[in-house]
Length: 141
Image (cartoon, rainbow, N blue to C red; front, top):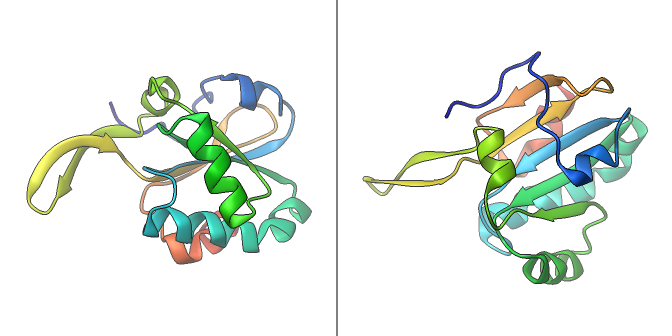
C-alpha cells in the first residue's frame, strides 16, 4: 500500500482522536532505542518547544509494545506520546508498511515516514525521506 497523500483524510486512531482540532505530527519509526530512531526522537525532543509554539502536537508510532515505549520515553526524556501499534493497524492504514531493501535483501517492514495532519483531520504534509538528525527542520519547512 502506498503512503497517504496530501489532502487525504488521516485514518483515525484513539490518540489522534484525542487531539481533534489540533495540528498533529505523526511520525512512524521502526524500533525503540535503535540509533536512527533515537536520533529522530531526540531531534523532536530537543525542538519540542518550537514545535509546540508553532501549534503542533507530536505522536510517534511504532510496532513496539507499550512497555518498550515507556522505557524509551524514560531513557531519553521524551515529552510526547509514543503509540504502540503491535498489530500494525495504524502503520498499514497510513501506508507506512511495505517492502524495504536492507543490505540487498527485500523484506517487508516499517517505512520511516511522517505525516502532518491539519486541524480538520486532513494530511497537510508527507515526509517520505526522513532525515533523522534534522527532522524538525523538515516538518517546519
